[in-house]
Image 1 (cartoon, one colour):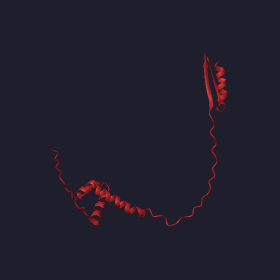
Image 2: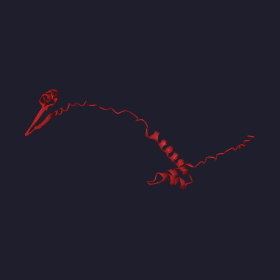
Image 3: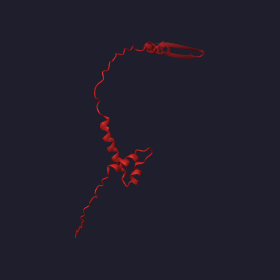
Image 4: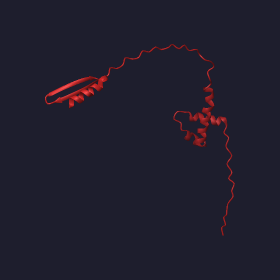
Length: 127
């Protein structure tokens, strides 16, 4: 007793509305005003905001090829080689060791390039 009733219905879409070029231009002009809300303008004209957004994209894309035309020719450019001198290297800082024992304080400055010798000296001194 598995009776399944199905309802076959055909859903018909409403025909797409065709708007005149003048109407479309007026809506787009209103949208381009400072502070204009596309959604509000669409609602006031009985349109879905997505339709108006699509019109704006289409209009922008229609302008793009005209703005991106390749240049008509090349201009000759003379390049002058730039001569640069290397900046003076910054001086390396010294290793500075300050040791205080009892009432005596010594400060040892060692060149950074000779850090291995400084390590040997410090190891011997700390024994």
